[in-house]
Length: 124
Image (cartoon, rainbow, N blue to C red):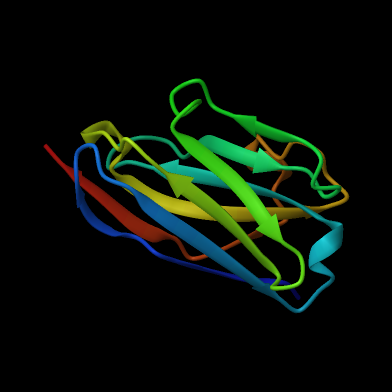
């Protein structure tokens, strides 16, 4: 059983930065395609960014392209989301997801394992 634990959320002013981390345990992290998703109050969970299990490819939602960067450290079994130039509309609970041997984990229905989420609040 794979376990994912997010951390790094918090309260930040608009224009600020945060780095989220998602630590994995219970499996072979280097074989997982990883994705970040977010869910704002009253809205559906949506795709934010993903990184392939080969580490070669990254993908982003249009709303975060140029501001967010996803990366992974297989030695630490961790995927990161660096968030810059944050906006109030980025306020949400951020979740990481995983699926084995996946290239672009951008769909909720394809996620095999979820973390519990971390709250990000951006004040104006």
